[in-house]
Image (cartoon, rainbow, N blue to C red; front, side, top):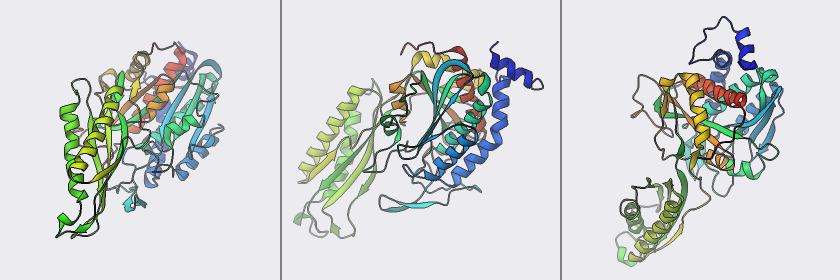
Length: 438
C-alpha cells in the first residue's frame, strides 16, 4: 500500500473504509468542506467579470500564502499560481480552476445572491456566477489545503492554476488560458498532465461525468455590421434598410448548418446572441450590428463554416442593396476540449473510487466550450463534470449554466473536492506513465 494511504489509515482508524470513499480522500475533503462552502458563498456574493477578478485573486493568493505556499500573481492580469512540492519524488501535475463571472442578473433567492451591477457593452446588467466558477475556485482552494496537509508524504509536485477570463476577455483585451500560457504559466513547470472540472446543470448532484476524446466544442465569436442608408420609416425606398438585410442574414445562416454542412460527421451550431441597430420607431437606421457564436468539433468543418457564413452574409446583404463588414471569426476562439484517451482511462477509476462507480457517467458531446482546451493542447489533459442540480429536480429541465436561475446544490462542492483530490493523488502515486495520445 502507498505510504500516503498507510499514513492516512493510521490517523483515521475511526472512519469507515469503503471502496467509494477511500479514507484519506474522504477525510481530507470532509476537513475542508466548511471552508469550501464559505469561500464559494463569499465569491458568489462578490462576482467579478473577466479580467476584473481583483478581489477573487486576492482572496486566493492570501489563502495560498496562509498554506505556506508562494503564489505568483498578476499572470494574464489577475491569474494566480502556486507550486506545492511533495516530500517524495514523483510526477508533476497542474490543477486548474477559473474565477470569472458573467454579465447576468441573478434571479435565485439566496442569502448570498449577487447584488453587483455593472455596464457591459453599453448596457446596465447584473453580475452573477451563473456558470459555477465560484464553485471551481472554492474547490481548488480546498484541494490545495488538503494536499498541503499531506505534503510530507506527497509524491511529486502540483501546480495550482487559478485562471481569470475563461468566459472571454472584453473586446479589445486579451485574457484567459491563451494569455496565461503566453505569459509563461507552464514555463519552468511543464506538467505531465493537467486536470480541470466543471459543475454542470445537466447532471444531478452526486454524479460525475467524463468522456474520452472530443468533449466540448470549439467556440468562435463572430461580428457583422450590416450597412445601409438611413431614411424615414415611411419612405423605405429612400434608403437601404439594414434591419431587413440583417434579419435575412440571421435566417439564411441556418441554411449553412442544415443544408451545407455534413452534420452526420460532427454537430455544428451557429447562433446569434445580439442584434443592435436603430434608436427610433420611425427611422430606418444606417447600420445594424450582429454578434454570434459558432460551435464545431472538427477543424476542417470549423474552417468551412467560417467561409460559408461569410459568403451568406455578403450575398444576402448585396441582394438587399446593403454591404456587410464580417469578422468571422472575430478573434482567436477556443479549440475543441480534447480528453487524452489513455489519461482518461486512468482518471475514470479514480472518479469511481471517489463517488462510486454507479455515480460516474459517460458524458455526451457538449456544445459549450472551455479554454481549458488550450492547456490540454500543450500537455495531456482531462476535464470532467460534477453534477450541480438538486436530486429532486430534473437535470434536463433545470436552469442551465449561464441562466440567471442557475442553482448549485452545494453537495457538489464536496463531490468536486473529493473527485479532484482522488484524481490528483492516484496520478501522483502511480507516476507519469506517458499517455499514448489517443
